[in-house]
Length: 113
Length: 116
Image 1 (tube, rainbow over the protein chains, first blue to last red):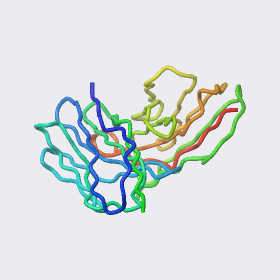
Image 2: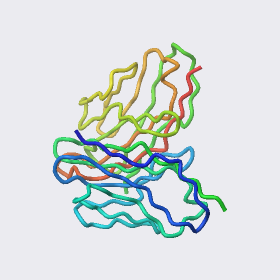
Image 3: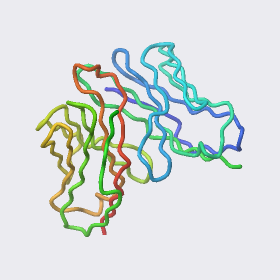
């Protein structure tokens, strides 16, 4: 079945540091890939997505590239801010008869001033 | 535009009491609907999903049940709450079948349930 593995952290960085959160997946066919962000006490918000190999999703300075050869979708940001502190979830959707999103366990990011 | 409403935002219930959490979606038709639970503020566990009225699939055996009485309404229930039912419950929707199943899910703001 489908699965997503992401670094669990927690990750603690200083403001303006470079961020990488690793995500790899196992899926049949060609899934769509997503990164969601959850701020404290809130629901999940879609951060970015990629629907086919070599696509790059980007939003708010975050980027992730769909790498089919390595089955990866790593999240990166060149310069994090305190306001980026949140839990980040990698997810995939295989579509077809499977309507479910499969999530990783989440990575807690704390950015200190 | 589409919106999702989930209520209540917080709930404190005694052990053995019933539960009803409601979720409604506006601005779309025939959505896929989901209930997730998040324990300890981290991982997401899919509890139920529905692809149409009256069609409910359960992912894990548990003390909870779900119903979809209308196209855009999804209800999570329990007859008798357990302490282990405490957690953060999230409702979500995605585009329905025939509209492209490989699409993202959109989440409500969640319900913090504490069973005491």
